[in-house]
Amino acid sequence: MYNEFFGLEDSPFTLTPDPRYIVFTPSYNEVLASLYYGLEEAKGLIVLTGEVGTGKTTALRWILRRLDSSVLAAYVFNPRLSIDEFYHHVTQMLGIKDWSNKAELLNVMGKVLAERHRRGLRTVIIIDEAHELSDYVLEEIRLLMNFESDNAKHLQIVLTGQPELRDRLNQPNLRQLKQRVALRCNMHALPTIEEVERYISERLIIAGAEDPQIFSPEAIDMIFRCSEGIPRQINNLCDNAMVASYSAGERIVSRNSVIEVAKNLDMLPDERVTGPSHEASTILRPDAHEELWNSTPVNGGVSFSPAYTSANGNGHAAQAHTANGSNGDASGLRFGDLDDEIHLELGDLDRFD
Image (tube, rainbow, N blue to C red; front, side, top):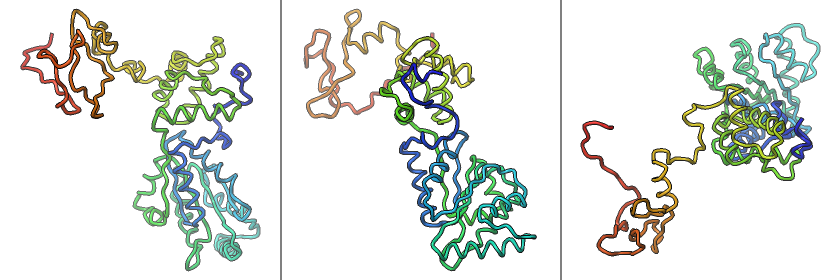
């Protein structure tokens, strides 16, 4: 809808887990590296957890597309399966067709997995939304981990799900499965404004933007605060804010556009903190704020500059400047011996007016 208006070739903020739009932020790289390590070293059972919308499925699909031909992988995206349905998925992946009961199936499966391992081939099952699996299927997964030789696992299983999956694994009846977990990974939300800005800019570049500075710094700040750093919520806010800016004919997405979208999506934080995060001088009167930050004395007061330095490089001014610019007279204030923190002590007050 707005692609041509902003000079894009594709929609950069869709809610589908498209691995083309993966952004390698430091926190995301850590998870991908852990998953790669677990699969490369044939660790057996790997658990990946993360909040809703943090990009778990995108990461899994990115890895699936990059596995070489020696790896046979099955992706189970519907966890609400009975035991028979679960094994149906597994046998389809392995090409096992002729079996009449579970004992026969496990016997044939063991031979297939052992032969693949002997030939240097890997077999991987990835189960998404694993926190929704029944205890019965989780127990079957534990039994499948018994397909191993003296020094190697013949089958690797990746369970991914919301934080509730950790709670499931802590249940007393699943403690045997928990002990089989060889590697745990946790997908975090983007922790800083800088990572959110990088995430937004890189997705715009992937979508064909010549200049990715489509969102104002204030808009990015607001997106970070409304989304809490969760990629899916960032996508939702960005997509709707770009639609709003396109409708208004604005080439730069403003903070106000993000606020209006956040209100509609019920994602706006507390009204008391909707101002830009860098505005911290609200406790001062306007004239005092002007005096403090612009070094403009009011009513003959003493001027202070926030950007003060000293010759010894410790960040402290050796002497304070008086209103007339003199240094070091008897009336001047000396800060050279003070520590980094200045403590203000209030006298005993009966009440605050």
